[in-house]
Image (cartoon, rainbow, N blue to C red; front, side):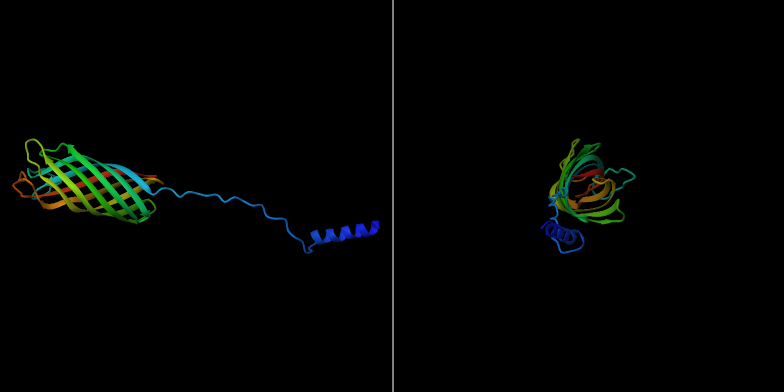
Length: 200
């Protein structure tokens, strides 16, 4: 009897470990790791030089018909894809203006093109509200909604931080509420902005 039991045990052992048919041990169950995708929201801050003029803008020599104003720009955006975002901007300028101060609120569609992993070119296409008040005895100049557009470039210095520079046309050849100092009845309003964006 002992020989039969021993023979049966050896047979089962050879089937389990010698290539015979056997049921493998169940695989350990692993719990999937749920990773949350990063937010596509970003915010930014910029400093701008805003030019308000009547007949002609001269960047290199101030004229009586133009005013150059320092402004601060706040930005809030959402990146839908790597090459498309929507961006809102709010700016206020009154520094060093001779006859004006301004408040601008804009909303832009922002398509971009990546030249390298760090450098991108972009456009700003949208509309905004422009308010240009007079100062130093000058009458108010404009309060209107207008199409707006711009061109710019950005450079990524960290995964979630980039610096940018752009030029925006906020108001072009619109009828002014009062005569400009050069006698023009129309006003234009443009901005050159340097800033930084932080992506959450």
